[in-house]
Length: 160
Ligand code: FES
Image (cartoon, rainbow, N blue to C red):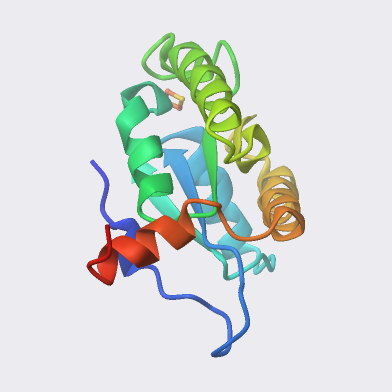
């Protein structure tokens, strides 16, 4: 399901300057279509965001999102169809419940609930897609790097 591993995402920042790294899990139907339409219309949005194509937001397991944060991603957007419009009936409702729970976990462990957001689009909502993408980039930029980053860097250096 996930086509890109978080560690494969190159930082768009010049050396030495931190830029947020964001994953956007987009369902195959409305959300991806809105992202695609934004591209077709040549609407500009931040290069900090990598889109992960998923069949439905209801197929995103909690561990996919937590794993992204554990690998050093600074923020995650979960984008699905409008409520009542999920092509798998209630996948987006399941995803909203999961993202709510993960936001609680992120808050409890000091990462911050604001780093995860769920949004809903119709296929025609390209401007809204761009607005939400830019919104999470700005939110995460204001929060700074994920607090999990230092421990990831220590682990990759072989430190306990
Ligand atoms: Fe879009 Fe389920 S198919 S959220």
